[in-house]
Length: 159
Image (cartoon, rainbow, N blue to C red):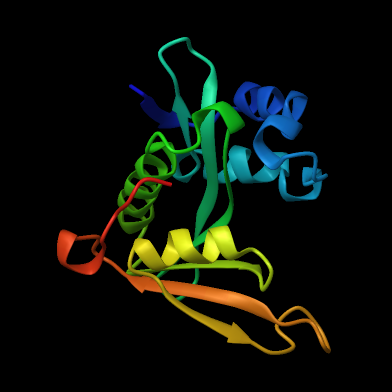
């Protein structure tokens, strides 16, 4: 699939929210989609647009203190999975984050999200379970990797 990567706009966020089920498989993930992320960090929130102009995927990420590029949410439309869309977003975000001083990336997911864990491992992230990360008795998978993003530090595979 040929895709174009561009910064997310508020109208893109509205389009994503209107079709959230197509990206999250029926899970209500609206709480992750705050307008402030686009208003303040739009240049580090890439979207992937397919040849038909439709949003194929997006990544909400932003620079954080201490040289961190934080990946808050990422999703690929159900019809675009397995096309390399997720990889394209993960190639765009490190470049944008590094332009803001990031020297490493971080993402968090639930311990049951085996697809996300496998995807991040293929991209060279170190993955570890951290007990009580999200509160007492709530472990999370913490995924980190250094920048710059090079072929020596990642082994991309289709998502």
